[in-house]
Amino acid sequence: MFSRPKARHSQNAYVTNDLDRALSIWRNDYGVPEFYVFENDTPGLVSSPEYRMKIALANVGGLEIELIEPLPGLAPMHAEVLPQDGSFAMCFHHAALRVDGELADFEEYMASLDPAVHPVVWSGGLGDLMRYTYTDERATLGHYLEHVWFDAGMYEQMASAIPVYPAR
Image (cartoon, rainbow, N blue to C red; front, side, top):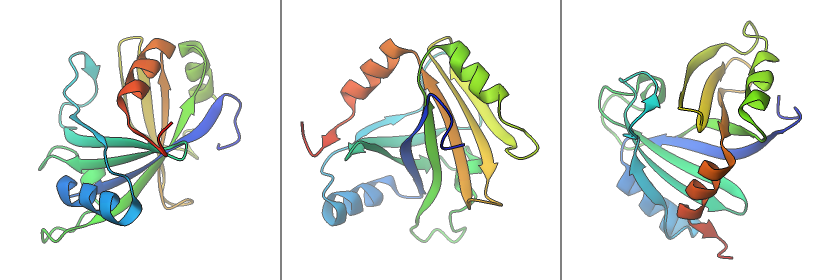
């Protein structure tokens, strides 16, 4: 899956129950001073309404780091690895594979995955600008994979908002 044409490992994502504390750790222990922080409340986002979260993104050495804080009771797939007692945690959740090209390339890529081997657990998108699908790879890799595609213009706009380290 990592070696498929037009797909590349583009992101490592972590879930946390305290985004501010996680950001502090990345700032103080890993030298990433700033992230682009937002809530996934984009109008037109097609997904399950129960999936609401705070998200922080930074590009570190060419790999995007994503920190996700599921909003209480609203992102079960992301919250499932977090402790129920409220103690702080930051846990690896998924790697993302970004598919380059046109939407048809993403659709072809997704059609090439055997759902019996790579079960789809969540998918959605934003019109014809973005698509994402999560597959459950925990039995073999120990984590989920996110398969994502962006329209070139949308990706450029998003990438321009994400801090890059080391600075260009």
